[in-house]
Length: 370
Image 1 (spheres, rainbow, N blue to C red):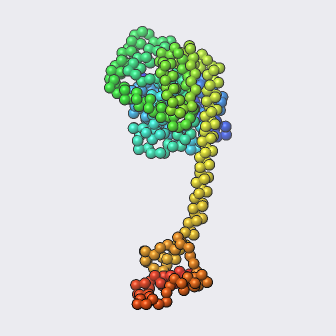
Image 2 (image 1 turned 120 degrees about the vertical axis):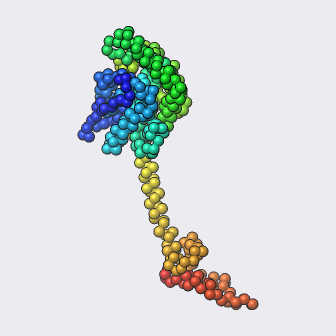
């Protein structure tokens, strides 16, 4: 809970015999346990969606390389599954999940992760399958007092809260972290928001859920985030409740929550199907165009092969590019009599030795065609 890295597991993974609508990747909130996210996994399961759950450690938010290492594990797990059975993928981020792991996943599949810049395009399959985003009490702005807000919020203590002495120690630890990483806060903060905004290029819908009395993820911050995504061309649905605790929207507003999530998952399936059909159509067009080129290509090479048999003169034009006339036909004889003079006064019209290769070459071509 307090260290680096994290863990991931399949909350629900239907076998090959079962029908799977897609995969929801759950980036859980800080200090969460499998039992805390089980109700979300069960809900996704009731809609036919598998769940890949990621629990990030708190310190990942301060060490991007640790967040990137965990993100790479998530992407590799997804890649293995999608190679066997491609399907739509939806990223569901809770609280600080984007900073602790999710934004690094986005960077990796986009080929822009500083920690793994040499991966190339091997994760393009994962990117092509991403068809939706859910932000629940998220994203949390990465500010200098973030650690303190996390430690002191009662939203993260589902069990009885720790005694005052422990909370005082936690507050001191968080303050020390903030002082230690103060110089890097702005750079990391900018990197986080730029990555989240850049996800618009994926072309997937967004569902953003927030509350006006959330002290961890202020409503104003999330509204600005949603508006910015819309300005960039994103398909965004924002739901704001007047009273709901941090990561407690499902518990306090179950009906509205289920309706909104069901809608975005259905829309994600539609986006994926449309994208798949478009790719198949483009491939079919490419194959047809390639077949047309292959049909025309041998005819274009016909003359070139004959010239190569006749000699090595590199200045001989490709006869396939010109209209061919039969020299022994009626039109050929007429043109020969008109255009080739038999005798010009003062000129010797006989072909010199240096012209003989071109002449024999022409004869060779004519013989081969006849």
